[in-house]
Length: 556
Image 1 (cartoon, rainbow, N blue to C red):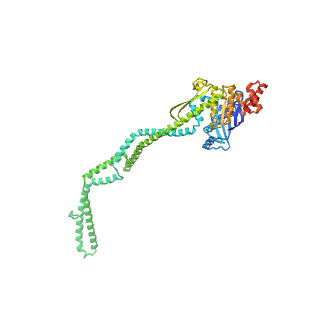
Image 2 (cartoon, rainbow, N blue to C red):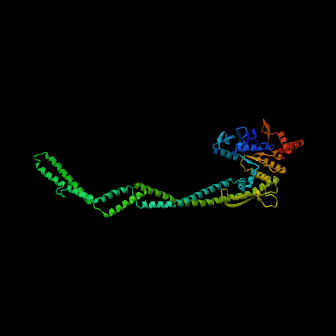
Image 3 (cartoon, rainbow, N blue to C red):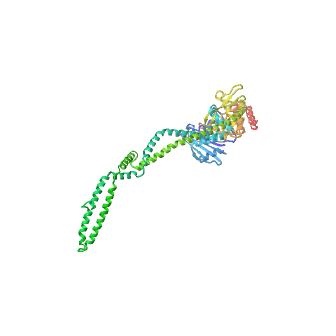
């Protein structure tokens, strides 16, 4: 609950500290005393937008802080999510500067305004005079019914499946779009794969072909060279061959070995050279004989050589680069081809999720249908208590397409008088009726609303007399389950307070100052008398005020 609110330099409030009770807290005061500033201060610490104009003139900043105790689990969970904690107290503060900037803190740690807003939404619900207009917005009706019906578990399960269905549909659409856009790419990749793949290239093949081609291309000249070289060496090929000359040299020296013994080792060397030359000549002759040109091989080799040159000109400077292009194209093509499989899987998943989502939407719809009957009756009972006995509320349900909130369209209709058919709220309800309808809804939702503090800002607008008294009773009922803070102009509501605060302004040093005072019984008696009789407070009015306060305390 909101335990304490401290305000400095906020409009006409120079410095005020207000402590709240855990049940029904009521603020009264003359028009213009600063009650709206009080609500503005609470809005500031809840993360609502504030403007520099709200800063008290002559000061450079405004400051608001609030102390909350007994934080409910949704609040502690959200704080934990934000990296904060709340053991005993939660202290929220906000400073607004004249340059328009503001800073916020939770338990002395700086936080963003959006984080403040998230926490604020879980701590306090403010219902102002204009908030009744939300009832005229049909889009809000479904949320109200779901709050009453405790649809959280069903709705959460449905929304989880619905979001998965949406994500699947988006992914499926994206993949189909990409497949259509990739059709030309697939054609291009197929051309690369066919062009390179049909050649069945192997690594280093071009180098081997080039070597063989040079050999065959020069076979005639090579053969002639080998024949000539063989002739130079072999005595069988020519009379003047090297072999013949060496043999002749040996024959000349050999008879003289006995006369000149040193010739013998030389002659042995000449003999060895002769043998070596014969071997070389024989090897050259064999190589020459092997150089027979196969025209078919040459033609095939020439074609292959040309094919490899063409493919390298088109896809890379080396055969390794060509092979890399082929492998990349093959991999990408396989990836694109898998689109069909992925699309098939996604289509199957989408169909399955659609069945699942539809089933959950129907369960949610049936749950809402059952709750609608109870809801209509309970709201009608509350409105009857609030002096609207002939008002009948009807929940009109229409089924449509699946949305994030199910398949239901909900609208609240009312019949203000007997015999009249229910019509939309916007066409029938007055301001005072809207306030009471909203209060009836708050009463019906009291057991289900997890927000600990409810603030009603002039909910008594447009009502008086017995209806106002009933509103006061109803506010006290709600305060049994929630902390209630109410700003009012009516005595019938003020007398129901457990804690009564007076907001009044006065002049000090030629400046208007607003004070907030917690009233005791006697002070409350005079304030109630002022509300009842204005400035002319007589003994009769005072006694009447006292009796009303005593009766309210007794619950009469």
